[in-house]
Length: 185
Image 1 (tube, helix red, strand yellow):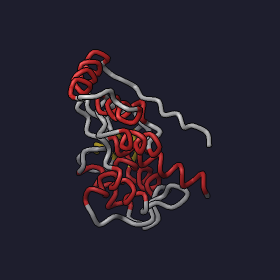
Image 2 (spheres, helix red, strand yellow):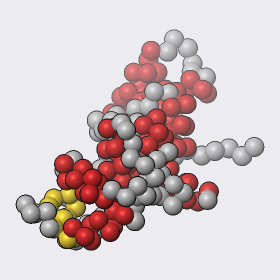
Image 3 (cartoon, one colour):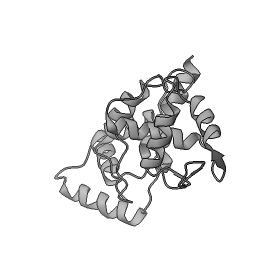
C-alpha cells in the first residue's frame, strides 16, 4: 500500500518550535513514532495526528487553513457535510435547508457564484440565482443575501452588487464537497 503524503504548513515557526518543545518536555520518555506525530500536529494546532489526517483528506484547502495560529476557527465539517446534501451533482441547491447555520453556508455559496464588481438589476440577479437552485424562489434568496450582508442593493431594490468580504472556512470545504460530487457524476 503506498504511503499517503499530507503536507502541513506552519504559519509561525517560532511559535511552533516553542509549542513542540513544551510538548516534548512533558514526556518522561523518548516519544515513539506515533507519539511524535501527535506532538508535531498538536504543536501545529490540531487535536492530534488523526484530526490532522481527517482535515487533510477532506479539505483540499489545508494550506489556506491555519487552525490555531491565526485564531481562525476550524471549519465545521459536520455542518458542511449536512449542508452538501442539499445540492445536486451539478452544484445546484435542491431545497432550502431548515437550519439557519446551513442556510448561512448556502448563502455564502450563492455569494461565491455572483461575479465580483458587477451590478445586476433585479431580473438579472434573479436569473443568476435561478441557475443555482431548483426550488424556484429567487426572491427569498435575494432578500436573504441582502439581510445577511452579502449583497447590497439600492433603496428601491433595482440594483444589486456583491459585497466583497472574507468568506468562512466552511465555504471552501463546501465548494470542495460539491466539486467532488460533480466529478463522481
